[in-house]
Amino acid sequence: MGKSLLCRLGWHQWQRLSTEDGQRYVACRRCGKEGEVGPMIGGDGPA
Ligand SMILES: [Zn+2]
Image 1 (cartoon, rainbow, N blue to C red):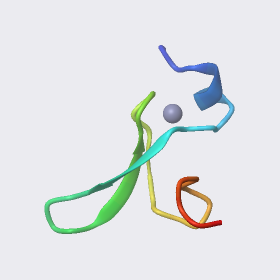
Image 2 (tube, rainbow, N blue to C red; image 1 turned 135 degrees about the horizontal axis):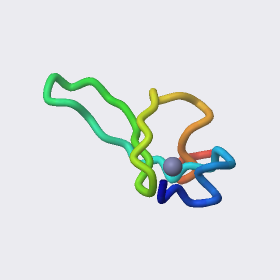
Image 3 (spheres, helix red, strand yellow; image 1 turned 45 degrees about the vertical axis):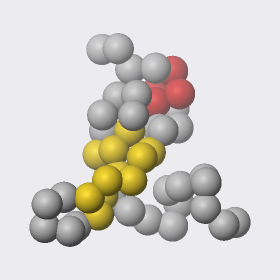
């Protein structure tokens, strides 16, 4: 519940985070979904 339409469509607003042991991951700022860092994730990096 509370998921935005964009998230339901898979357009999550990923933000890059890192765990205490230095592992990087991403989580959606809107719905909180977590994911692995991959080439498809980003949007603010170089094309
Ligand atoms: Zn989301």
